[in-house]
Each structure stands twice: as C-alpha cells, then as structure tokens.
Length: 185
Length: 186
Ligand SMILES: [Zn+2]
Image 1 (tube, rainbow over the protein chains, first blue to last red):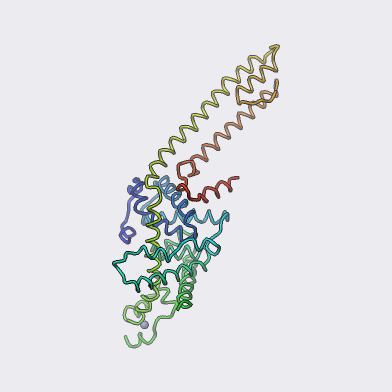
Image 2 (image 1 turned 45 degrees about the horizontal axis):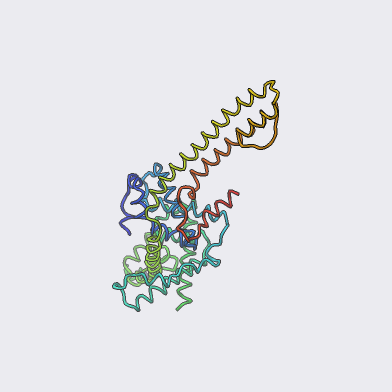
C-alpha cells in the first residue's frame, strides 16, 4: 500500500481511468465510508470522486501523490454532502452499518493465530467506537493522517484548516482512541 | 546524558505527536534513545494499525462488488447523452424556425388568422392555448426563451449529475447520494 503513496505519480497515470479505479478504489472507498459511516452513500461518493478526478485530471500538478489528490477531492464531496444534511452521520443509527467484527474475518488467516485475530478485532472495534464519538472534522482529519498517511501540511491544505487546528483535532481523536482502549480493558 | 534523558519520558501529548509526525527535535532525540517510550509509541499505534488492516480488508471486499467496467460506460454514455440532448435541442429549434415564419405569413391579413396563429403556436412548441396577433409573437418569444433555458438546464445537469452518466448505484443498492442531490436541486 505504501508503494502507492510513496511513488511520485505523473499526470499520465490519470489518463487510464480503469487502472486508476483498480489501484485506488478500495482505499478511497474506505476513507469515504469511515468518514461518513454509510457504505452505500460512500460507494456513490467514491464513484463521483473518480468522475471528478478524471474530468479534472488536467489540474493535477503532481506535487502530491495521486492518493492524496483523490482524498482531497473526496473531502470536498463529503463536505458538500454534510452541508446538505439530508442524511445522518456516524453518531446516529448508521454507525452500526459497518461490521468491523465481520470485517476482521477477512484478514489473511495464515498470518495470525486465533488469539491474535481476536485482539486485532477488539482493537479495531475500539477505534471504530472512538471515531463515532468524534466530530465530522476530527474524524476526517484522523482518517487522512492515519489511514491515508497524509502529511499534516497536506491535510491542512485539503481541509483548508490552519495547521494547529489539524493538530488539535488529531490530539482529540487520539485521546478518544485511548479512552476507548481504556474502557474495554 | 542518556540517563538524564531517560528520566524524563515523553508525556501523553508527545506520544500523540510522535504518532502524528510532529514531535519536537529534543523529544525525538529522547525517543530515539529510550526503549520504554518507543514501546509506548508502538502500543499507542497498534489499535490504529489494526483498524487500518481490518477496514482495508472490508473495503477490498466491498470494492470488488462494485461495477468494474464503470468508467468506460460512464465516458461513452457521457458523450452519447450529450449527442441525444443536442439532437433534441436542434430538432426543437428547427421546429421553432419553421413554425414562426408560417405563423407570420398566415397571420398577416389572412381571414383565418386566429386559427392559423393557433396552428403556428401548436406546431412550434405543442401548445394547446389559443393566442393571436402581437400577443402570439410575445408569447412565442417567451416560450422560445423558456425552451432554450430548458435545453441549457438539461445540458448542465447531464454534464454534472453522475446519475445521467451511468453512475447509478449497483442494482439493489440505495443511491442516497443521487437522491440527496435531486432533493437539493428541487
Ligand atoms: Zn522515555
């Protein structure tokens, strides 16, 4: 996964939309899904994102990775949706739509023992629960940093937040993750 | 020196900063030399790494169920959609151009003026209302303008709304996004 992020991509990569979708869709879908907590809506936004990226590929300057660029487009689409307020976000009922317990069973079984798998599942659930307690902005910033491995300056640029605000959101998010780990011990 | 550094372990905020990638140089120096703090950072990172791998496994599964040939269809249907809309627009404009002179010709001192005006108007835009004389011309212009506006709207929405470009959700899945956009436009 890191190779995708680390490689400096050129604009020509964006011309092959099928390859673009193949390479980045799962990752983008994860980002959008766990930003808004609704997998169905996330699929739709993810598709919109590729459409927007492809149609606007001429504006990609190559000063960040393609994944960072796609994530920034997704952040704008998510923000548009959040402004609409036509549906409910994480703290409401949709939070249960993604079953992390079930998802843990998709992990390659040859890599870990049943005990390890159970631990992994527990810890993933803690983070999911923590995400549910965050504001939209805190959650988005957390996902950008820790799922998409974006630099703080890239997050600040994509979200149009001051760098210190990004840090504050991340501190708050990490505190929430710690609190969840504390309650389940 | 090393002993002194080890006595002042990283605080919780500094552990967070290490995760965030913005730990100050001095604290970084301590972290490099302190196995205890390294362990604390690793432990703090672990739940996030687990969440990352579990959610990626989930997303890869989910993504695999999404249409694979979507982009090609999207682009093809995008240009086809445009051609269809333009075709309709040109047809409508031709109808207006043919009907308007007819209306003027028959309307100029002709005995069956009102009937002809009605015929002209209905030929132009399918209207069923009875209109006549100057009123007919004004309404015709208004209708033509409205028609052009509608064509404009149609072209704009077909280029921006993913639903018209073949981006509908997978059958059986809820297309809440598209619904939300429609609601906004309403
Ligand atoms: Zn230490």
